[in-house]
Image 1 (cartoon, rainbow, N blue to C red):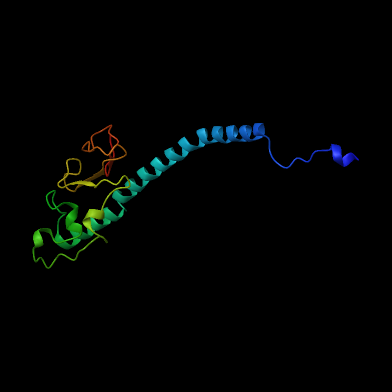
Image 2 (image 1 turned 90 degrees about the vertical axis):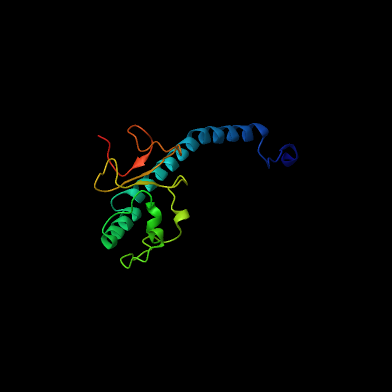
Length: 153
């Protein structure tokens, strides 16, 4: 007799579902901005690693200089790491110095790296920078978000 009066509960109530949805939305409101912040920070670190002294571009430029005797000038640019500048038959050129195509050489923000030789900062070398998160080339000026191969003073 007791069984007839007792109702079986087999689902959640609307109130319980709304409460759980609210808690999940609250957690997402705090977690998602942190994830985007970490993703942006990771992109900055990738760009720094690419242009740093031990990065692949810096090593390729050093190998180029070792073979040719100088860094590629600004007009030759980073394209010289992929193909012989000007199509010259220079036997010293042992490239390509980087894998892939020149058009693929982009930073973690999907913008081309900027290169200047002789550099304004490194007068005996080169200046290499990424436009950074805002995708705007500020010329590596102090205070910009550009990611540079030099340290601001």
